[in-house]
Length: 224
Ligand SMILES: Cc1cc2nc3c(=O)[nH]c(=O)nc-3n(C[C@H](O)[C@H](O)[C@H](O)COP(=O)(O)O)c2cc1C
Image (cartoon, rainbow, N blue to C red; front, side, top):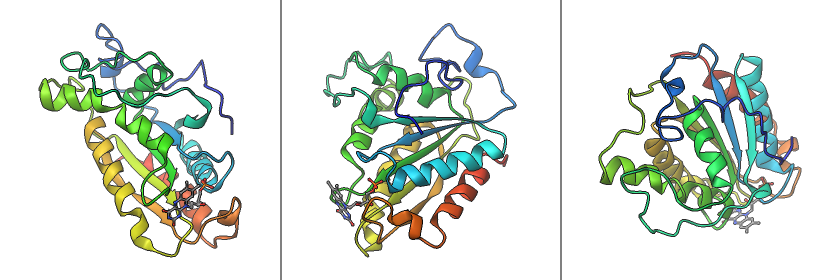
């Protein structure tokens, strides 16, 4: 896995109506599904990275084009709540998020991996999610479509771990991911969350997690 951006990304090159209003490419039906994997941990090659890697491997084995985007390797700043995105759906802030927007809109499926930090998704993950406020404003304030025509069949899945033995730790992250999926018009396809996973390689000792992540990635891209 690399933290470096992929300049030739097949996902990024699938333009969305917002990324390029003149583009018709987003409206074409591609036979090949794409899976964008977002790595939200501060820790490289940690537990959620490993889950994500397995899920992306499963998706790739099922025939999808896959791409990993590790937020920690990039410059992202928090949403300024300036509301300048209303009506255009475009964020005016100039940082690496401008590369992420076309990926989020262009992908058919999203694998979102984040550890639990203080009962929530990580700071990196939340920063990226908050920056999708431009799509929320477009849809729910300006009342304009994100995709025209709509693009059904896109799905999003959460992968998470926490150090403690309390399953409710994931409640907030699930709600946050459901909200992100709603705004990106992805069907929430569920989650794979694991308790008692704390030090860096703990997930390697889990009896089922990596195999389940692989299978989740494989299943995510199956039609229907
Ligand atoms: C800043 C921080 C906050 C954390 N908060 C929680 C928490 O609220 N509940 C919990 O069960 N684990 C918490 N953890 C433990 C992580 O969820 C755990 O170490 C996890 O394995 C990290 O995943 P990663 O290897 O993908 O980074 C926290 C860890 C850090 C660094």
